[in-house]
Length: 191
Image (tube, rainbow, N blue to C red):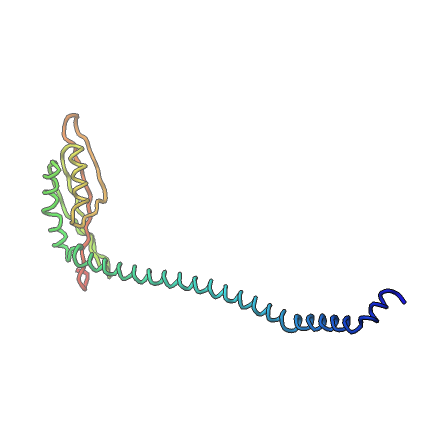
């Protein structure tokens, strides 16, 4: 008899028990452990995906909340602008610039030569009217810079549309022509 056969015959019970134990381990692994491992890995992947989805949802929620807050703030600021800054009608728009323009000119050490107001034609269903103002001033360059700075810093709602600076003869003062605009609310019927 060969040595392997002899070992098998002498220790058949031990070898059979070990072989049967190995087969049982392979069976338990194949039927229980491996499927549970796959299921566990799938659960871990789903948990990671759920955590990622949760973070994305939280970011979207925060963005939506910021959008709502921003819209609310914008509505409040727009309401304040309509109620406190924008003139209520054309006459109020004229008054808005009538006194402040010469006062700012004096403060900037420039002389107001002329000013005129031109209401723009009102379009159908318009909510705002536009009043154009053309002002001519005379003085030195530094005075014009101060005038423009003071005008832009003033609480009155006036927009500088165009600036023209002319020099006549040498040694004579400069002439500044400003085209300004202000807007005002229109009534229910565009008046």
